[in-house]
Image (cartoon, rainbow over all chains, first blue to last red; front, side, top):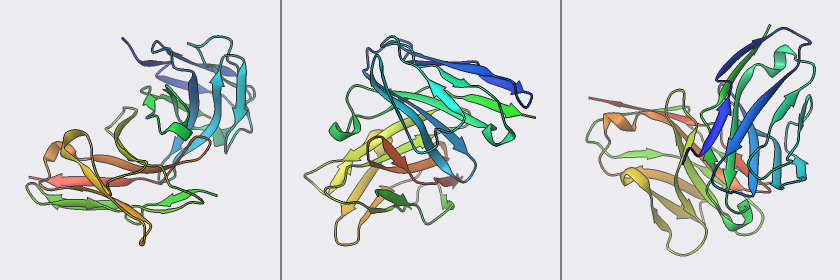
Length: 115
Length: 110
């Protein structure tokens, strides 16, 4: 049971490039989330999904897109990378939504630098 | 809007001493509160949660947290700190997803 797996671990992008951060989970969780972590700022929610085919914006969605075609996968797309998107990105999943108090299971993160 | 605040950026304690990491919250309705820990270059790990019931919640690795409604606090505690407890600790509150505090770095010295 691998849990939540994120790839790549590290990436350097030039301004204006695009990339997809991959996230997959093998726990059959319906709920998945993308957070970004900036030093001293905690974690900010980018997008979340309550099941295959359903996504919704979080607190900081601008500059990002997501899709959820399967229960297992929840990729995050950066279309035109900007220096402000330099951050550590975490994917997480849970069995039920936060209304039920389900703990989040996190991946180990992707460290992205945009120069 | 739901929010949590962690008033201390860093907490330093000596090994064997009790530790407290502070968290206060602001919510409408009943709060669902969480503590997570992050070790270097890793994702966050769930420690414990409060939803309802006993105000003292016990969690992983000997940690516990006390929910105090009158003070709107949910402080994380451990009776005897270990060097291996050194990490970044996050308090969080339920919304459509979790809302995290800015984190508190705990440093336990030997």
